[in-house]
Length: 195
Image (cartoon, rainbow, N blue to C red; front, side):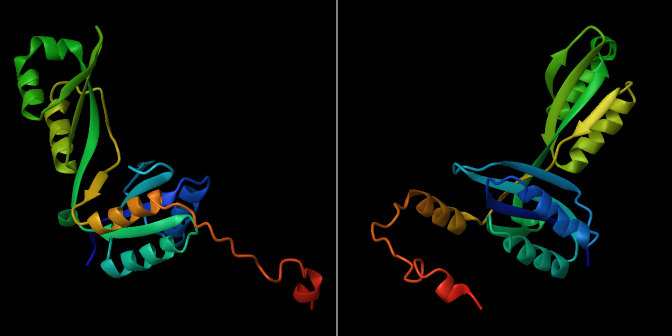
């Protein structure tokens, strides 16, 4: 049965990796509902949050395929119950509606919306929450001449990811070994590698 899964990918910061990951989805004709990339808590390691609606069997195969990419350290998949997640949304409303109608201000307070920009012709509010929350606020504000709405990609943190993060932190602080291992065939060149 299909359901929402968030795929979390930890990878080195390399050009072209995002494109290769997206190709894995497009080859299988799987739509990405939301995609967020950002730096992680470790310098040089990036984190991808990819939201899809698929079966667990398909998601397992996708994660295995993603982990085959050289720069990818690890990939995980989780259901909504296994993560803490939020989405950021911006709403543009005519300033006149906000100033003249106290109802709009009460609605914004109820949903925890914060003012981002105030101009004579419009006011922009920001709120974060689950998709249902942002959609509900859109419906409420559409009654008061909502001009524009945009929602950002899902940002998620796994509830049970401590083990991987500890290993990643340990790896970051390990010093390179002092012992240098030479390749015994390096100087032999064509004697070994020709047919």
